[in-house]
Length: 202
Image (tube, rainbow, N blue to C red; front, side):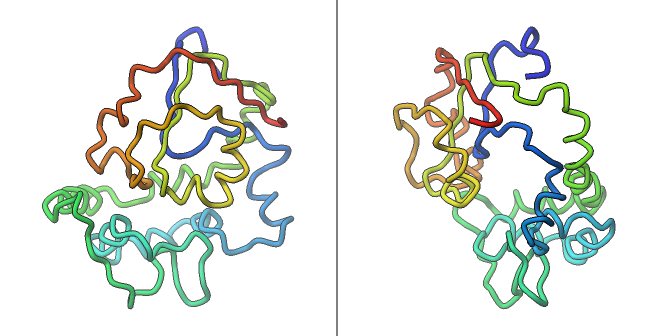
């Protein structure tokens, strides 16, 4: 939306597109009485880093195994959830592939990625000139049918604004769809032939 002259077609994975909200995201959460959302947990520098870097292999096993991560944190637990929950790797990723992530994040830490969440309000401030902007380019969005992002509250509010395309994807796909062997996007890569109009307030 910033430079449609350069980005003449766009595609999104898993997270439905959404426009710039009416107020700063973190302030909106607070006004709604929410104080345990995972993005709020990520705000204080050093807290999430300490949890994730304590045992990097455990962190990635938790992320890939699913079922343990907490979108809304429970008392006494961090984002990785209850350690009593088994972290069994799914069939689509090997221990060797996990080791690659572990090796790199032991070297870099998690601060860089977490800082993106710490700039939510700043990004809202900086995008004021694009308030109400729509995606006008030929566009494509796809996600797994069992992805919690589109089946949960976030998707319920956004998916009705996304035009439904013919369902040619694998219906067992989850949030990590492309990691599960669908590097071709479920056969949808060539379908950049329809515009997707998505507004902020519609």
